[in-house]
Amino acid sequence: MKRTVKTAAALTLTTSLLLAGCGTNNADTGKTAEGGKGEKVKLSIWHNYTGDDQRAKTMRSIIEQFQKDHANIELDVQAIPPDGYRTRLKTVAAANEMPDLFVMWPGVMTKEFQAGNLLQPINALLDSKQEWKNGFLPGSFDGFTIDNNIYSAPMALSPTSILYYNKTIMEQNGVQVPKTWDDLLNAVKTLKEKKITPIALGNKAAWLAQSSILSSLADRVTGTEWFLKAAAQNGASFTDPQFVQALQYLQDLGKAGAFQEGFNAIDNTQMEQMFAQGKAAMMIDGGWALTNFAANASKEAMAQMGATVLPSIPGGKGDPNTLSGVVGTGLGLSKNVTGAKKDAAFELMYAMAGPDAQKRVLESNQLVSYKVTLDTSKVTPIFAEVYKLVNSVRTTPVYDGVLTSAGAEAVNNGIQELLMGGKPADIAKKIQDAQAKSLGK
Figure 1 (cartoon, rainbow, N blue to C red):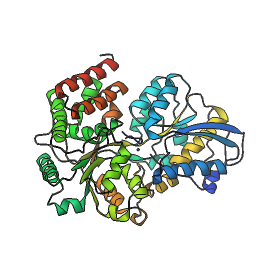
Figure 2: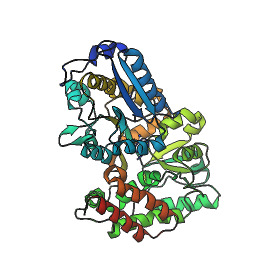
Figure 3: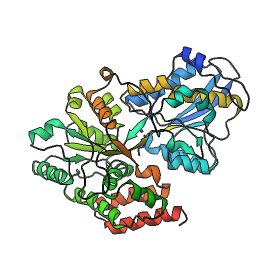
Figure 4: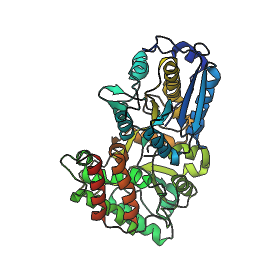
């Protein structure tokens, strides 16, 4: 997934709401940390909201406003660029030096941090605000839940495999929006003949092709049940023929000339710029692109954009009317935070993921996993289109949200190798070996 996972959001509550509703009773102390009252505490928080997109600006504004409204809470904020954020966080995790609060992904990261005794659950916060807790969409807490303990509240929703297309380029060149794999290959052939890049790809950070292309493409071939069994190393293996076939489909797409030269040398942001500037007919990317478009693309460019799901695969076992995706990141709470600091931490978590925050995040062109009615006048047309799309399809797993860290890294590196000509069967074996080893099997 992206800087995201694959992707996150939330906003400031007004001062009055904070004063009225955010003082959270802490089982450790029985005290509350409200507004400018209470014991003075210092909280460290790490986040990856460093960009110019609307979501990042929104998130930073929440934190800044929270600091202004809470004189008794001093925030030590570390803002780390997305591409380096996971590495930095894993480094301090390995040294058991976690910040008090930190942006954290659901799934594998949550499981690994919990297994390392680095986290504490937030059940008390959620249970104290039942209306808020009940406002999340079904399954929103699944990736943050271990043994009935919930470790975070999602601040976004991140579909990862949206097929964006430029309506004008497609129409002018007689190319239909692809519904089947043959449609896609025919579109690539037609566009290549006209010297147009069919699909922009920015795979420098390696996660992109895994999260946005393979996760959905492979599900089309293998079905979700097979992937979950293979990930658990229980009744399926990544060397199984169906997964090797999925890798072959992706390699065939690359060999057909779908991607521009140097796709492993540009990053996700550069890819999005390339597409927005009309330098490619299509792009396969996540919902996070929408907030970047809103901040950086022209209205004319966004008016040309359409969105759909990846094409169906002939004979595939997976449902073609799906998008791979996960709930977005949430704030993790260090095991070491207690007393008044924990009260303050709960307040900040609510400010960044509460109902008002979710609404403002949605209006910053960022999807959320919370029940909010969208006012389409406040978002871009392409966001409104994707919002409608996401609400009409089912979500399937993203590979790096389910695999172990070692397994996901093997997939990321394997896809880079695959697209440079590596043998699908050899790459499948590397993935299988990495996942099996990390699970001790």
